[in-house]
Amino acid sequence: MATNQLLPLLLLALVAGSHAGSIAVYWGQNGNEGTLADTCSSGLYAYVILAFLTTFGNGQTPVLNLAGHCDPNAGTCTSLSSDIQSCQSQGVIVLLSLGGGSGSYSLSSTDDAQNVANYLWDNFLGGSSSSRPLGDAVLDGIDFDIEATNGDFFDDLAKDLAQFSSQGKKVYLTAAPQCPYPDAHLNTALQTGIFDYVWIQFYNNPPCQYSSGSIDNLTGAWSTWISSVTATNFFLGLPASTDAAGSGYIPPDVLTSQVLPAIKGTAKYGGIMLWNRYYDEQNNYSTTVKGSV
Figure 1 (tube, rainbow, N blue to C red):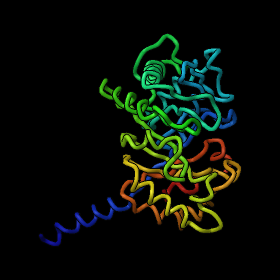
Figure 2: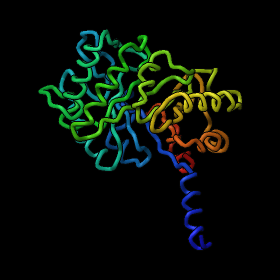
Figure 3: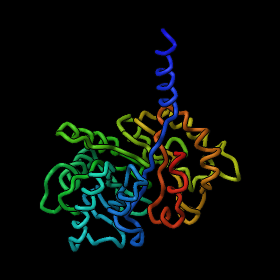
Figure 4: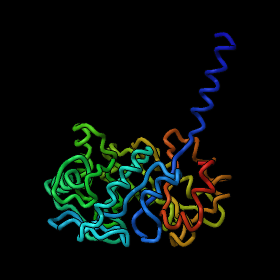
């Protein structure tokens, strides 16, 4: 091959090896974090995750909790429909997160999982219902932030949701496991190998997070995750400020100079996930690190 033909290929290889990543952020649990539309128009995020559907499964009436933003019982969350569509028009993927650290959720059977999947499809995705909490906007997918229950039947829920992709628009599946592997609540679901994005929570988990100036526990856990779970991309989940979590905060300069260089070479590196938009605004974390992600 002539040298002048080889150079473009070398450049392509360099670009492919750089693994530029994106930023995902959770929105919805602080009424002082600004609007969903403003969050998306900031240009900082490729993924915005609405948090949380805190109650579902086991015959319970599902409950959407978006803190001080709106009251689903009063029908005021339908006003978010135009915000969601605005986000999507800018290329931002908008997801609904199931679960969270506090809530009442569990699945009792395969039928229960199918019922929850049908509810999510009809009320938040491409189906139809007279009681869509967020209005007519069609979300891009469902996030699993399951921090309670033993995880039974969540693999069925994931597979049931994935099947709706055959009806036209792809339904993205994402998950936010804790960094100790395997995750006690999400392992069965993740072993289906059908999740698109996995944003691993590297905080409030001292054995596998950044601490005392050392990245070794974090990079070791990262390697375990990417070699043990099949997913399209993996994201480094971080608190956006020291107030956002009990432990695991990584100063921006440490993230960009030590942590990211150690994990960005991973073929399935996707970027970082931040908890949450409110803390990110207070600390300007994503603004500081975006160019390095």
